Structure formats: structure tokens, C-alpha cells
Length: 402
Image (cartoon, rainbow, N blue to C red; front, side):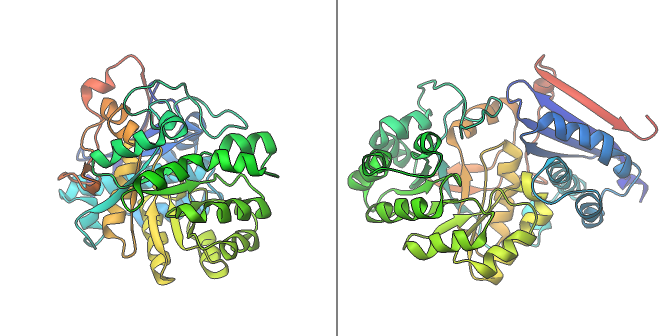
């Protein structure tokens, strides 16, 4: 149909969050879909205009599966490099475009909901978390600002007060990463008893003050060897974390399985994996209990749903990752509402109440620790015209024949 023909592919970037890239796709009827990816923004932008736009322009925007196959399987690479990130942003935009054409929310386009709302957990980053370019050897960047949502400073310094603040908002689940600085100093090869005691102190303090009220996940960012990760997990067991996340890198699946066998704590992995194929290996060959995936990195809505279905096939829990942008949050949330074994949607309240609202409208609704989708077509998130006019925004556009 002529009206569904893709006529414009644009990318948008903002100095407010330089790691983020938005992708906008318009069809001949003027309907517009919006996608997003995070990190390598300038590189992904170049790929989209130099490698993907020429393919998309003039094609039917409704052929989402076919475009995913071409961009990911035929023109892409394995992993979560620039091509995959670009394909993910385009896929999200095409699903959103379909939503705007039909007037239907994304969860309904996927075939309906398994639940009307889903629990959230707060990833305890601050307002400036991952706002600057990545720095080698550090997992997070950005200055502390010490406002009410500087949860990164909070878990490192006043974990009880942070937990109490979250509970007051109805959020009963949170994630912290107190081991990162030690991993940098020790290169992930060793941790002393004193270092371990200091690193686990926030987890211990929250457990002591709020046992039965607040559950805490322990993020390890893949920075440790098997024996050290196993030692950390065993030391954390008395504090009953709801999971340990990425204790070792997934370069060797036997390694992650060894950690799974060394602890009673559920192990979660997945945000660094691209496409469903490595997830199948993880599910078949390890004792990992919870699968995480990011729509902006792993192939968009199309592949996120496949990964969620794959996790359900193996009777494992699923949760979308979000520590990136408002569209990633919304897209993941719609899939989580749809997916059979989804248990959480991650969010960063410092972002949700902060810069997400500065750049977008139509965010999912989070109330009393639960998320529901905004009553809008597609994934729901839009960038208002007045935001686009700000000086810190830049736009690059490809059109047919231009």
C-alpha cells in the first residue's frame, strides 16, 4: 500500500543525553514511529544513514519481520555493536509506526497482555549516571548531585534512608552495585575479607533494617573470575538478595554455570547479549534462573519478544533491561506486559522523574511499585515539538532520492 511506504528516516540527538540516539521513521501518510538506542550514538547514526536508510526508503513500513531479517541477519553482525543497535532502534520505530497507523498500543499489537501491570525495581543510579561518555575501567560516570533521587550516592552512603525513600513510593525492589570500585582496583582477581565486608555492607544494612519489606538485587557487571564471584555470592547469601547479576562475563558458559552451582542465590544474565541465539545456549547449558534483555541493544521489540518466549519455553523468568532512555523503558514494558514469564520491569527513578520527562511525553505509568502502559498508540512515547526546537538538539534526515 502506498500509504505505508517509508518516505523519511531521521535521527535525533541531544546534548542533554549524548549517549542516546532516537530514530524517527515516517510513511507516505505522515504517520511517524520513534525508536531508540543507547551508546555509540554517533557511530550508530552513521550506520543508519549510510547503511540502513537506503534499504528502508520506499519499502512498506508494515513488513517489520522482513526488515528485521534484512537489517540484522543480512546486513548486521553478531553481538550488540553499531549494526545491531541501529537495527534495534529501527525495529522499535517500525512497531511504533504500526501502532500509530492502527491506533493500537504495542502490547495489543503483540497479541495482548498476560497481565495488566508489572512490578518495577529501581536501579539505583543518580541523575548523572551514564550521562557522560564511557570511561575505561569504570562502570558509571557522572558527578553526584545529592538531590532526592541521587540513589547512587544513597546506596553507597545512606542505604537505609534510600530504602526507606523507595518504600515510601511503594517500590519494594532495588538493585545496587557496591563491588565495582573494588573490582577495578583488584582487576576482578581477588577480594579480601575486609573488602568483601565493606562492599556488602549496604546489602547487609538494608537487610537488617527492612527484612521482608525491601528486596535487593546485587549487580556485579561481569567483572569477576569464577572463584571470586562464587566467594562473593556465598558471602551475600545471609542477606538474601533477590538475584546476583552478571557475576562473570558470558564468554564461557561453563564459567557462569559454575557460579550458579556455587550459590543458592538466583543468577540473572543477559543485557550484553545480542539476538536470541546466545540466549538459547545460556538456557540449555547453564543454571541461570532469570533472563534479562534490552530492546535497544538486542534487536528491538521483535527480538525481545522472541527472547521472552524462549525463556518461557525453558521455564525461566524474564525481565527487560532499562538504564538507557524513555523509549527503551516503554518498549520493554509493553513486552513485559505481554510475556508469559516476565517478573519485573527495570527502571531508574532518577531518570524517570528527571531527564526522561525533560525530553519526552507518554511514559509508562509507575504507581506504588507497579507499571502500566500509557493509554496511547504504539509504545506511547513522543518527543514534543517544543523540545525538538531547543538548541541542544541536532537532526539528520535521509529521504528517497535525497
